[in-house]
Image 1 (cartoon, one colour):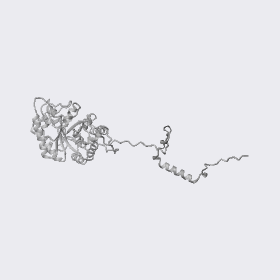
Image 2: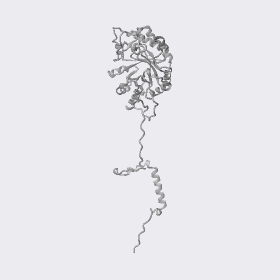
Image 3: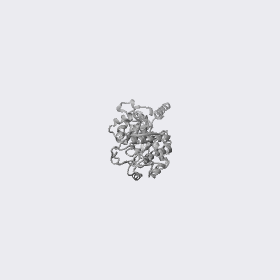
Image 4: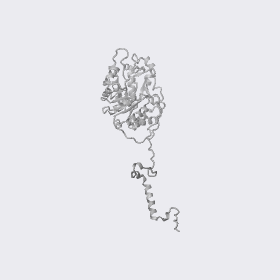
Length: 397
């Protein structure tokens, strides 16, 4: 009778030498700790590569970049939305276009005078400055005058016009806060006298101007759908109003970096009568520049106007003889853009509308002869314009 084979019970571990067990345990521990550095799949044929959970841990998706600012829906031009606190974003590499953009002497954005309204407190003003700085701008062109009134308390306009400011709510120190914060951020503030010497029927001084015959005959229809009346700077009362107002402003705000006037400093060529007002306008602006520089020699007196031929031919604005410090060529449409760039090469820079950014910003930025670029938010939403510009800069290599 043959001997029956006895099957072992259990795993048989008792029969395994202790030294072998230690080797197995030690190797397993080492394999576990080094799983991130191993790629066992390279030892297998391509069609037999497998996923081993602890050797090939599942990679979690890296967090996507969070927009630098979560914007609300676009606000009307006359409303000053409070920019939300910026949300920290992932570090972004400056693109080649970004490096060229940063070399521009002035990278400015225009803000309407109404952005000072709605009782904007100090924190709102300072956050607004930091917001535009974060979008890549180094200059704010802030409206302080327009349509016949100031957006600050003015003794000059109170004496001449019967009102010391525009009928809007603002805190008296808002310009001081604006300048102070801008300088802390390494930025400049240029006081923008928008609409220049023109008013419309909504101006708080319209009836007064008509009663005193302060406007030249006729209606200025430079822009379709908008009727302007031009204050006659040949009249001493009108001329003195502007000169005294400028002196008051640069003395009250001695740290302002510049004052700027735009193409509304001019007469429409199609006003009735064959009257050449060119020389008188030149004399008036020369006087404005002189008294401003005398009151505050440190301030720059700038203009943003049409190219010299167009300005003189259609607006009696012979600004090449105005003795201003800097001229920016205003190009708010794409007609003859290359020719306008050729003009701008010879002056301080160019001004673009936000509707041109997608098509023209790269061209203007990459042109080394364009020293500065100013952006005007024609849409009425400067916050959205600033974000759009930054996006274009970052997405173009």
